[in-house]
Image (tube, rainbow, N blue to C red; front, side, top):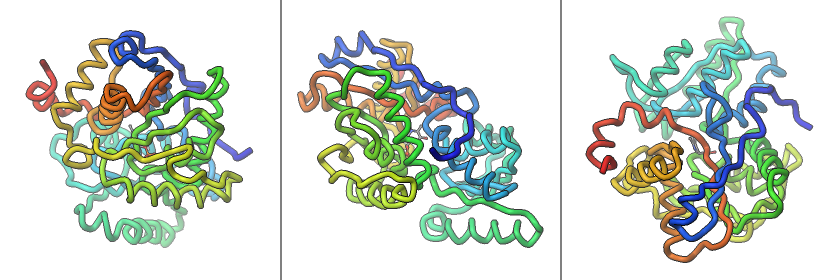
Length: 320
Ligand SMILES: Cc1ncc(COP(=O)(O)O)c(C=O)c1O
């Protein structure tokens, strides 16, 4: 048993989406990891329970991580770090704002130390920039613990393998398909390394299948140190589904907004335009095409703060 901090409200509920099931002709259940908490909502909390336990064991007093300017992972890290008395430092891809909203606003409410970089710097130099920040803290007599993008490392995967165990205890047998969004690969890797909950369809929200397959394999390799593995071959227990990324990370088209609206109106359930809205688009399309049947699980990974600040777009594309 790894050490882990009690940050998430667990077990998260498992609910049936009755009207959606009727509409799609498949049974749709939802695993409510959006209910892991309020400040700490979403899938990142499970990963942070393990990662921050490691930071505390390493006697760190600072945590450094990175993500997009509206990163849920960065906001969750800022909140979780404050809960356990650590100083949060965020490297954000994007620009400072005169009127921050959504996750960036919350980062600032939690008093995270913010550093900004361009997309190019983020792509090629984020590791070095975070190492430099850590070295600066070390020179000042402090100890910084660096968390990779999305909390997607062996520890994060271990947390999601354990989440699969939690689901297995709530159900009577595996699903015919489990849908979850893939943003940095840790959730998919963890679910694929856990007990059998059914074939996992990880829906890429950006990049492509080749990129995420490689990421999942690399994360699974790291997870060996946590006693997990080996990862079954792609296509057996897990797969990366592409075709639902749209124009790129964070960009939602009318189909995504309409799906967000439809689920909110049929089920009173909030999705987000960056992750869960795209994953639900995939579930809709695959069910309508007859490629999934029977019992389907939608793993709700949170992200509702991503709706805020996008009102004009919603009215234009998803409000009908
Ligand atoms: C709300 C939400 N859902 C899903 C994901 C994807 O999870 P992962 O990064 O583990 O692939 C993220 C983060 O990337 C997220 O913030």
